[in-house]
Length: 346
Image 1: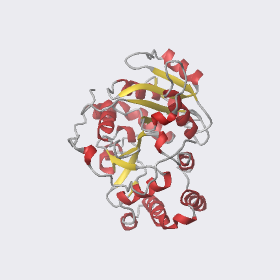
Image 2: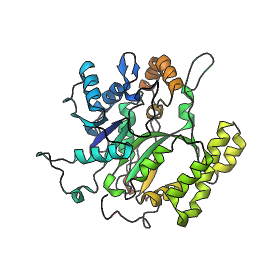
Image 3: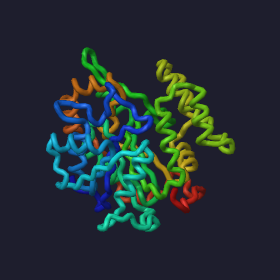
C-alpha cells in the first residue's frame, strides 16, 4: 500500500520479548502461538511488509527462537523489507530503547551521537494482534501528527469492535475499554513515537507492569509513583478511569456514564504529556484489527475458531474517513507550552 501525502517512512519495532511483566498464554510467549499453522508474529510481519510507510522491521525477543521460526516459516529477511532480529533485554522499556538505538547504527555498526536523532520516530507494534492490516497501519502513520507531537497512540471506538463480540453460538472477543467523556475506546497498541523526546520514558515500564492490576491499593500506589504528591490534582482523572473500568465490569452503565464525564480526551492528553514530559496525543482510527489482541487463553481459542471469518471481514472493511490535507497544521490539543523538551538522554 503506497504512503499517503508523501510522508516519511519509519522503522518498525515489533515487540516479541519475554521480559519482566510479560503475559503468557498456555505458558507460551504470545508471539509463538499458532493459528492455521503459522505463528502470530508471521501474520504481523506479513502485514508490515506490505506497508509502504514502513522502512526496516526490527523484532526484539528471543533471538534463537525467532531465527528458528523465520527459517521454518520461510520468511524472507531481506525483501520486500529488511528484517533485523534483536536479542531481548529484561523488560519492555529496555527492549524498545535498546532496539531503537540499534536502528540508529551507521554503516560501520556504530551508534552515532543521539542528539542528531532527537526527532527520529519509530513505529511500535504488538506481537499478539494477528488481524492487523496494512491499510490500518498506513492510515495510522498517515494521520499521526508528528510535527506537533512526540508520541501518538492509536485507539478505536467500541462501536467498531462489536462485530467481534460473542454472537449466539459463535465465540468472540469482548474487550475492556477506556471510558472517557467522548466515547469508550480500546487502545490498539500502535505507537508512533520519538524516544529521545520523551524525558520520563522509564515510566512506560511502570505503567506496563500494572496494566492488569486489580488491587486497589496497588493502583493508588501506582498513581502516587506516577503523579507524585505535587500532582495530586490528577488523581480525580485517574480514579475516574479506574471506577469506569470497575463499574463496566459490573455492567452498571449509568455509573460508567457518570464517571466518564470526569475525563475529556484533551485533559487526559495534557496529563500524560505532563507526566511523561513530552507531547502526547491519542489518535482515533477507523480500523479495528490492531485492537484485537490476544490477552488470555479464552481470547486465543476464539481467535483460532473465528480467524478466517474475521480475516475476510477485515479485508473487505470499507470504512475509512478522508484524511484532512492540513492535519499537520491543526494546533495540538495537548498543551505544548508547558511541556519542557528533554535536555538529555537516560
